[in-house]
Structures are given as C-alpha cells and as structure tokens.
Image 1 (cartoon, rainbow, N blue to C red):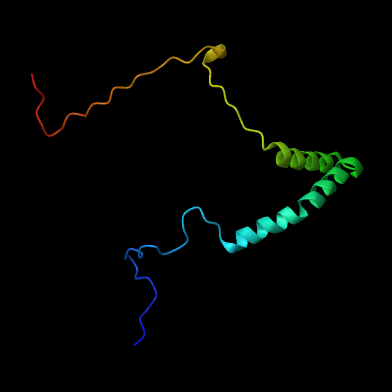
Image 2: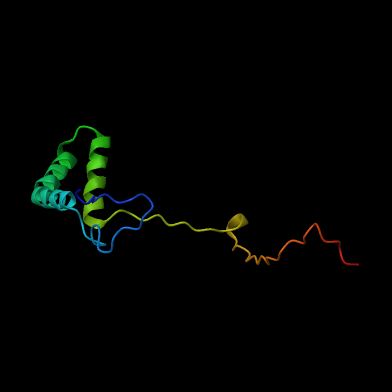
Length: 107
C-alpha cells in the first residue's frame, strides 16, 4: 500500500513543510512582474485622465492614484485632547483581586 502524503488532522506538520517564511508564491511574483512591465503605460494613462477627463470625480480619482503610487498613501494622524483642547489627565488604575464571597468578612 502506498504511503499517504496527506497531513493527519491535529497532527503537527513535518519540519520543513510548506513555503519558507517571507517567500512569495509564483502567482504573486508573476503579477508583480506584469505590473512592472505596464507601470509606465499606466502612469501615462493616469496623466491623460487628469488632463482630458470631463468629470472632476474622474480627475480626482486619477490624481489620487498617481500621488498614492508616487508618494505613498497619506497616513492618518489623531490627536487626543480633553475638553476645550486641554491635555488629558493621566489615570492610574490599581488592579486587585475581588474578595471571595464565600469567605466571611474580617471585622
């Protein structure tokens, strides 16, 4: 009888099984290569859309895509303040176990 190569449910996988950490699969590598091959044309198309589009929404979308690709997406910054912009008060919480309700309180 041939040895089964299927993993048994709940059993640890054999050492060295699977793709190495950080490696990409072949499909991802192929898609990246195709994107690199067409990057210049895609950028030129976005620039054409910016110049020639009849609607503001299409122009804005093209500008956003172009800037996101060229400069990176904008990061969101959040500032936390108290009432009327005042600084927040630091709070310390001391954690202690709750008394056991089965034990009688000490007097």
